[in-house]
Image (tube, rainbow, N blue to C red; front, side, top):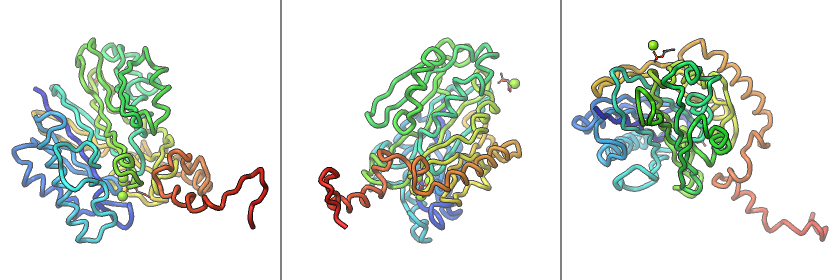
Length: 375
Ligand code: 13P
Ligand code: 13P
Ligand code: MG
Ligand code: MG
Ligand code: MG
Ligand code: MG
């Protein structure tokens, strides 16, 4: 049987700044989906990470379903009404268009969805990040599906030994390429290291996979809010759905990719590099310097279109060390204030509020050769 997992998220307001979604907003979204999604989604769950409200839905309408996308859009609209009434900051922030037009693409909310052949047990994890961008998933997804030092199953499990295929998007040129691991490993890394441009969109098994031939096994929400809005409107904080076990990374291999707090861009005003901290739902709020950027992992199994779970996977002392290292890195890099590489490089500041400041000084520049710098 084919089922679709659609994870759709949006920032529709938070408090006090970009810290945390309000429970009343979450309640309104939940109520809207319960009332209007009855004959459409077979099950759903809600979560929030920082200022982003997150909906995980299961249905049989396939990806890019107009009905499912419209349900999520309208639920976020209903939530925005509550956010406005409460005076939450940035109410409706990610709803960049006035009305729904057939598909959420280019409208602001992040979408990670895949149609799958449901296995007798279908375990998966939904990863949700705040204060960073879709390319923040490049490193952990690569580790899960291509790096045997993270995922020894690639070496010791016969069904994983073939490796996986990666669909990589160039989000600047709007182009996509399919590359295979391990044969194209160096080409994959040549691209995905440039994480603000080349973004892993999907991972597939190869046709020769013995248990799941030619299946979508991971998907990441990949939007460029700034390119839609033409100015800084917050970061496109990403989410990913990753299937697990039986010829795919084990749950623990998938989670292992977050034991190392690597650097991502985003954080304060979407303009700074900082370490990503794996946290439980209880710590999924943004505080220090509007961060540090965080990732939450919720584990599920799917059966007959119904969800069991979630399990809050980072709610575990096994990740205390990663959190402590992330805290130390936060302290270290924060002392650089407005300097690179804490602050993002110029080309990535293009859509922030910095160019307007530099523009104001434009007329005061003189030719260095002429040595006429006015006092
Ligand atoms: P499978 O049972 O999914 O094949 O993987 C073994 C496992 O869970 C090791 O951690
Ligand atoms: P969000 O994308 O999470 O709204 O972040 C906005 C911001 O500027 C935080 O400082
Ligand atoms: Mg926000
Ligand atoms: Mg956010
Ligand atoms: Mg955002
Ligand atoms: Mg087992």
